[in-house]
Length: 55
Image (cartoon, rainbow, N blue to C red; front, side, top):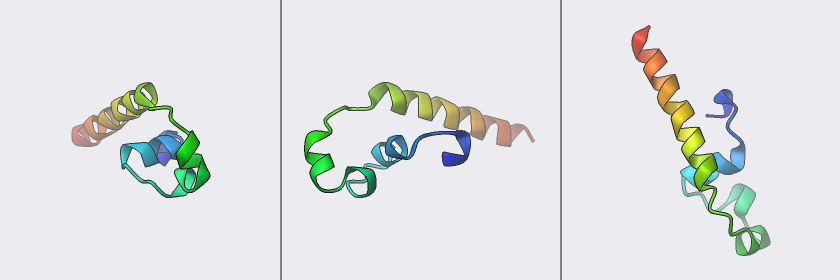
């Protein structure tokens, strides 16, 4: 997903990681759900997978 231009915090949220960008105190105070960003990331991933299936 990083190759597709998806930011690391969005990837971590999609994978439900609690370490990395959201470890420690950041994880306590960062309450943004990233719902729109995750939706955009998954759309980009779907397009990527579809393109791979066509080749």
